[in-house]
Image (cartoon, rainbow, N blue to C red; front, top):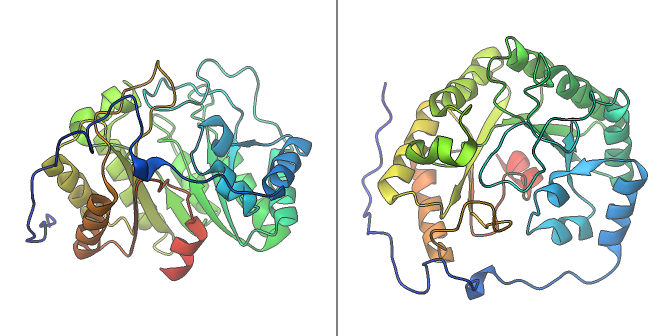
Length: 305
């Protein structure tokens, strides 16, 4: 059955200097730098254990806040991605090596020493591996759970053309399975690259709950890439029609000159409105705001839902 959009007022996207991208960030995208040395402690632990994080590699604007709270999103399978996504600062190319056999234990050790109760694990895309790295995800989930007892959230690649990869990850029963849609259908391949597929993403999220209904599904979009309001609402409706539980909406920020430009800075009040519309659509938990990222305050979302 097709999902129907709620009947709500839908004003046009505002324009003007406050919301149109320019060389200067609007005031709502400026935030204080956390004080103290706790963030250095977190960074030092990650360096000691030889671990990568999406916080550093993707130049996340929340990195110092998260590090100061002794949390991070672990990035497994190396630091080189095989996909040329137009929005992501992670280094792209041909990965120089196979996944490290001891990485699951190092991730588990870091989670234990940081005292994490909810552990988020993501990765680069590894199209060079027969299973896309699915078995490595499986072993990381089990290692973290055995060492810490924490709940686990995975943010995986799309595993396109990797037979049985998704089933292998779900076999480990992560509490939350996240795969980001990132943008609307019209912009999908421009933003995510030629191998990506909008319909594949939706179907993969649906298949997760078919395999194990206990696993919560989650997805997120970046705003400000040129999407229209109607396109955004259609994408949210598509996610709900595929039974996605959790949603994140955040502002796209250009990580460097060679990446896709910001078309528009979305004001906080519009994020609030879109978040309320998403709740009316039936998402169990929604995080919507300029600084929201897929793993930002992930524990709060998983627990309260």
